[in-house]
Image (cartoon, rainbow, N blue to C red):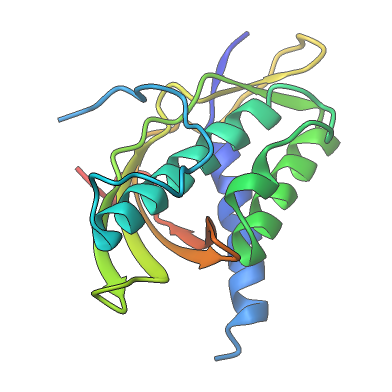
Length: 184
């Protein structure tokens, strides 16, 4: 029996809340082509435009890698390290571990529609803030053994993410997902 994946993201939200609190003591679109490794050479793009493109690619890659990793109860063969680091990586791995401990796997993939909202510094960014209305409506969780499972429905939620250039590679280092219904 297929079930909605509100809890997939809920598990990630819980892991994000833990990671953030520990670190902070201070129209619908299709997913499009699968992300590939960011290219560091694109002569037709300015430095700023290239940074934006690579940051968006890392963000989309993060969700794709998370969806692919969730299709199995195995923690092997994940591309999460390729697209994430720091709090984001810890939160996603915690979400996968929670699902794995409950015998759950995911099906489908969340639909992203990210936009860049801030560049720092503006001319030659090394940090990019992204805002998305992530749609988890068709990102489903099921029991790996095929038994019945009741999940919270997914939906559209606002996500704010920070993507940083680390050793010449863009990676999502933090993301904060809102509740279902937090964006139109």
